[in-house]
Length: 312
Image (cartoon, rainbow, N blue to C red; front, side, top):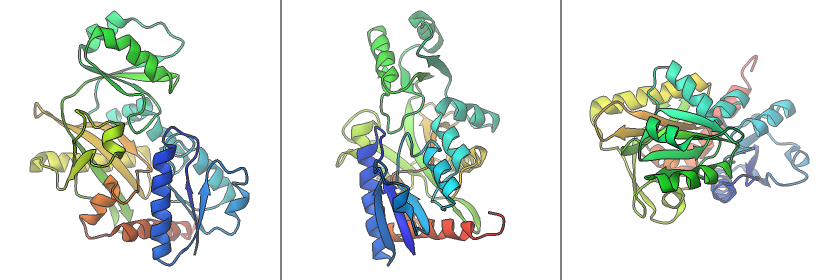
């Protein structure tokens, strides 16, 4: 089986993608696969896909998770691990995804969408959201460009910073609580929510970029220390979010469990979650007895099985 692992790319998450891709490529080689590693910045990208049976997408952020590379692979008729064009684009657009979650009955944080060209009234934002509040780009991952704003002096700077990464940003209410995540795996038996992981930042107050990717930046607690009722709601909503966006094969759905014991709040759906050996998705797989190599290879198997089905 000839597998291309596509990683790197042009997004702000390039370095994370390189780590995910190298890990996936090595795992597949240990499983006996013929693996070609392709950095998405290659000028010979399409030519390098010649004689490839399946693509493992280890890209993150723009051009990787937003449906663009998925559309190209669809045109080339090459199967790939992960969601298709529409689900990828919707998940990447946080504002649109939240409207879909609302429709599906999944609790979201109150938000306001701001476009770069419109006038912004700081007083209106303060009156509607109070402090602290969250400012983030609409289409970025890994908390890039995100700020937790605690006072007026920080708000304008946070908005300017978010607009460096996108022409559309989100203002959201800040919800204090515990961050948890649910890995979703689709098999021939259906959609499965893997054990919930509680994320505890070690270096910083919030689960920011440093907490996610630096050594010892965070602790992953499995199973999460939440009550059974909350666990059931989080798993149910994670599957519902995956289905509502039309995701395929895998995703990882992030939530906040509020400190005030109200219903969980969905943060986002990651259609191509990080896949280094210490990432959240492989950690969840380990909790059900699947090694890093096993889960990576299984995702490829599921993709190939689907691609050979009639009318697929």
